[in-house]
Length: 114
Length: 117
Image 1 (cartoon, rainbow over the protein chains, first blue to last red):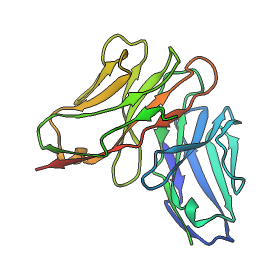
Image 2 (tube, rainbow over the protein chains, first blue to last red):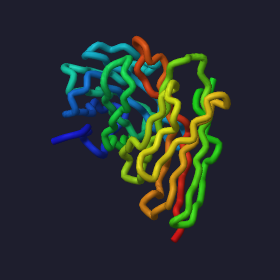
Image 3 (cartoon, each protein chain N blue to C red):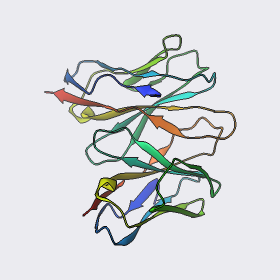
């Protein structure tokens, strides 16, 4: 496999459920990101990991909990979400900070909270 | 404050014609990067073109070129010879703080492009 892979592609969950989104990259990158894309809003950066260390938490509610066990894998653990959390969640990777390289994105997980 | 502004919510272009998608940005950094991404209905963000703030030449990648006007803080995307497959959402993005930490992209609201046959 190459590129950035996200699973699942679609997820429907109730407000009391606990679920996790998974992202995996095979590009040798050492920075990974979670973005949220809601309808009619710009992409919002949620979390940044550089070399497995979280370097950015963009005021994200604690019901979203990221995990980066190694530089190839990134998770987003979800619990007690709200309907307004329904969105497309995009994972991206790139070379680490300070380098002028583009971010590569996965195809996203379309999340619906009911 | 809005960092990236895309003033065109939607654009139409005739197949085989050129189209310009506007992007203006706001930064006090001297060192930054500008990116354009394409997002088809499948959802994936596809990288198109990159322009560094110190690059003297406008970036080009195949049918894509970036009209970079630093003094105006604009980085418009030009797509030449439009194809039906170019119909998608297009996002302009900026990375600030290229020296040191803070490697993150900030995106504009996007422009929906529709190519007509």
